[in-house]
Length: 200
Image (cartoon, rainbow, N blue to C red; front, side, top):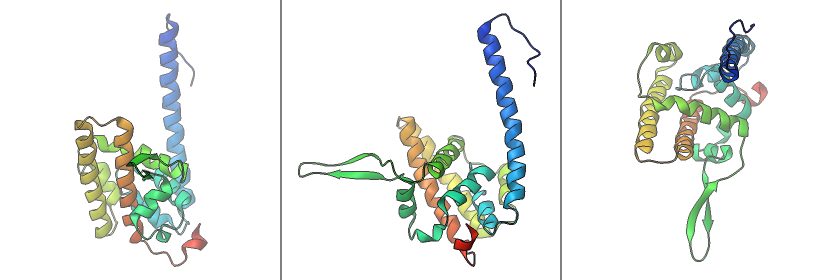
């Protein structure tokens, strides 16, 4: 897209150019969604991607990335195991004098963790059953729909409560991402492919 508009100020021209770039990126992302939708059409794990897509903030790209990055979620017996694998559980520092919590471990799958962190931003706003939400859960089993709504109601409330307490933004995002991982695990338990290992 050519920059047809010209500004006298270098700074205004830069901002205008940046806006154009973002529009082009958004258009390219739409193309990516279409290509990805076609690509996962025959993937045996496509139903799991669709089920995860029911969770607020988890679009097609995020859902497909999570499934591809994490793989067989049934290997995690508890949601805490998944959270730990993702690096979202603080590690403990224990000494004879003090026991405390140290920052998050630098382990886990960075791509999957980044996807969850990105998804968390949608929980800043109140929970609501808008048209996009209804479209995401259409055709899904009732138990998946119930989990999706429970996740939306709980995580939106938690985000705002932590913000109201004055918690730093990174701590809020991490705490909500950790809980979102638990809901991802819960949704995945409802999906039982005949041979997950052959699907990846």
